[in-house]
Image (cartoon, rainbow, N blue to C red):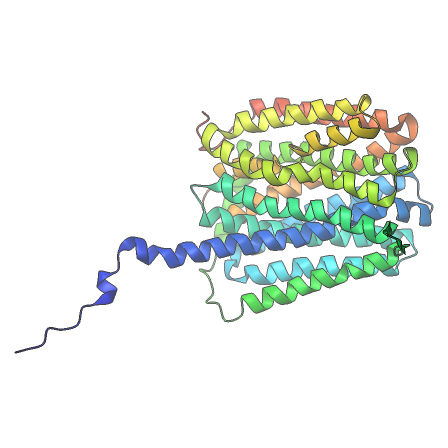
Amino acid sequence: MVDSPPADTTEAESPAEAERPAEEQGRRLLYGISAGHGVKHFGQGAVLILVPEVKASLALSDVAVGAMFGARDASSGLANVPAGLLTDMYRHRVPILLMVSMALVGSAYLMIGLSSWYWLTLFALMVIGAGTSLWHAPAFSELAVRYPQRVGFAMAAHSTGAQIGNTTAPVVIGLLLGGIGVLGIEWAGLGWRTVALLLVAPAFTTVLVIAARFRGSPPAETGVSLAAYLDATGRLLRNPAVLAQAVLHALRGAAHNSIQLFLVIYMAEELDYSDFAVGVHVSLLTLAGIASTPVLGVASDRFGRRIVSTLSMAAIALFVLAFLWADDGWQLTVNTVFLGVFIFSIMPVIVASAMDATEAGSEGTSVAALFAGGALIGAVAPPIAGAINTASGFDGVVIFVAGLAAAGTLLSWFAPRGREVDA
């Protein structure tokens, strides 16, 4: 009797079973990049809570503070250009770009902690801007390639990591600065320079984690050639749908940065809130977004980007204007929460709209154009808001920011779109 040959278990594996490792790897990639994005935004958001201390210590005017954040945004915009090029041309080098991004953020906080000079502090904010921008092109484009049918969801999941970082940073930094007094335990807190130096650690720890996580990983498919890249870039920069989203991103970012910055200064200087109370309110500005970001992303996949982004920009204008009467106490707190539902959460929908209009192989360049244009245009808003705050107070800033959001509402509705079919 002849023994039958053993069954070929490889051939017996179903297509669904064969796809599971790839799906699991994709989920790990999504979660890993999103977690790194959270660390990046923790470092990026922490500087906002340091502003009142830095402003008082260096005796800065509102315009000088606005200029620092304007310089940060301009640097962020310029850094997107090489980030997009390198991402599309060298996709197998994405981990290196992510490591450089976090290393720059850590180095910037080292400079801030050691600085007693305005121009060095301004330069450090520019380094933070460049470092954070180097993350966007490789991360967003990689997710767009991996999730072509669920771009809105992938961008929202990635941005949820940012929301977590934005939410935890203000509370933690406010606590470190303001100290605590509870159950007989009194702690006066730390100086702002010490806090800045502490922020070096999580940034460089993330660099080491990225290096260890990707060690030995097979390189991904190499990106496009320089000639193909330049040809695709030329077509992209003539694409009205992508350019419209870049302007919309600029208006959203200008509104976000301006109201957030001068809300912090208003609470610290006019309302005399403690560092911890200021931190809690800034956290509230992003806390609701942890839930609303994926909801808006999925809604945009199902019902269309146009309706979701338009309604969200209109809500931003409405809740910013509400600060004219919700200017203190529980009303300010509640209004901050409602504004936080939309002000950052709509950003991944804008990115997804740009991806809808982008041809394959140019995802990194599209993200770069979106963030570069947005940051460069939006860089003028914080200094303008600073001048308005000096001349007209926080109410003037509110009206200015509401106007930016209203312009974004109109642009969102009338903007040309890519391949997406609006519901």
